[in-house]
Image (cartoon, rainbow, N blue to C red; front, side, top):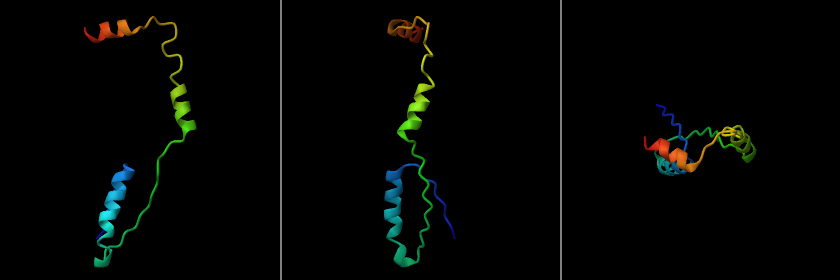
Length: 71
């Protein structure tokens, strides 16, 4: 029998692995294929910079945003 888990949270992954490792002596075989999807600071910077200038030449203030939100 096989179970496949896709766990996005590293902390949760560690907890589950700890729990499963307790059953190794009972015949449980653990096969892991760890693929981390961690973006680098450079990738994050490029993503953020895509939004540069979206409010250019617009009269947007905190007050005008609040007035629109309460309508």
